[in-house]
Image 1: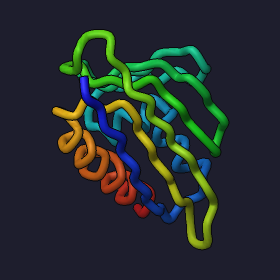
Image 2: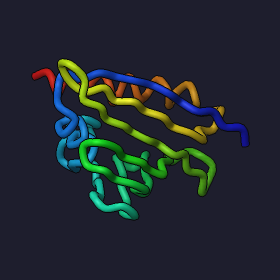
Image 3: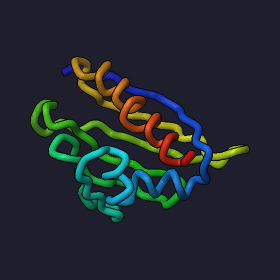
Image 4: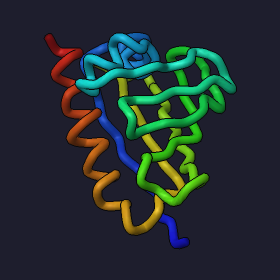
Length: 129
């Protein structure tokens, strides 16, 4: 299977802790996603969003980095990408650098756009309320 990598950056008018919490707090993540979310706060713990995204927390450094084995439910069975969210305080907020490696090529465009449409844009709206 051919895979591709996604690299994106987004800046939020909030401190790194607030940005980290939207992704790591099950209730806040559910509000962001508009669906149920169960997010473990421990390395080795599981997470899922609705019945379509699942994975395992590989590395968690509060307010600094999240690394996940991440998959969408219609990907080939057993295939996980690696999603890394890095947070850096910058003037006026937080710069999030996102890298997702191992995305199946046939799903690349949808996943790449999905991060913008379903995560970065609504996160900006939530954080700027």
